[in-house]
Length: 340
Image (cartoon, rainbow, N blue to C red; front, side):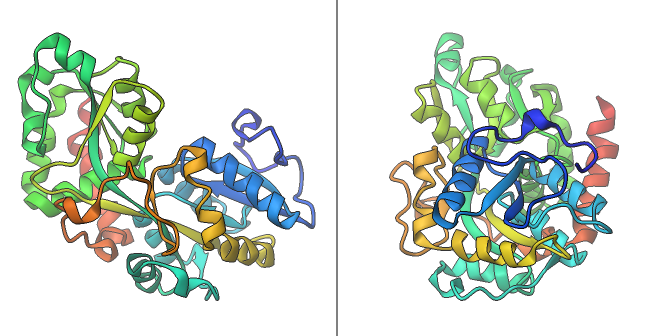
């Protein structure tokens, strides 16, 4: 068993737990989307192919850190999901390997662009718009106006009422950091982050923790991808999604085959399967409201329409590079994280 793995974190129903070396017909997967979708995807792959899956769910930054730590002795075959910036960084460090799937031509242009940006070492599998969700009951009770633009988050009435993740561990939070830098310029972005720091109650480890807290009324606002907000609303919680009116970034969730994987042929089999319309159409059944990459899969009706959202021209190559990512994370640690 790889060091540091928590058995309780592994799926228990219909999946094979990490217990000693993987069997000859077992795919080992690190998964960086919500737990329900991770489990549903692993179970569907087993149902369709007969191949067992050992799956561990990890936030994007944590998955990248583990893959990097295991580079001399990889323990997993494939990394499925999570913000594309981290997948591009993994590609630049040769932690993942190129693969030309016969199903690439089934994908949206933005997914193929991700694939080409990373020299075929990662591929887009879904997209999601960055924004936040707010608890409508809390805002009504407090008589507050909801934030509609990034600049609104500076409102002193929101003191201690915003949660966002730490960009070192969360792909959501790193996308937010990179978005603000591209909107305002680096220095002004960090000044903005300092101005809203008093309004941040906690920098969580998980990118979905803030919106879960907002859904439960534990905080007023959670910065998140809008599909995570919609998931909470669909479950009956009093949250409403906001795409910032002054412009916002987005993610291209990605998939990568880990370099020198224990079973590269199983990794390729999963990769091909995961790009199909049949596989991607199961996302909504698992409560996943991301926009799928396969052109034959219609977006969920609840998902934000990309054409109606003010999106920035997000530079995935630059902000996924090891140099830029490391620089921004160090500056965040020095100027924001260390001040807590």
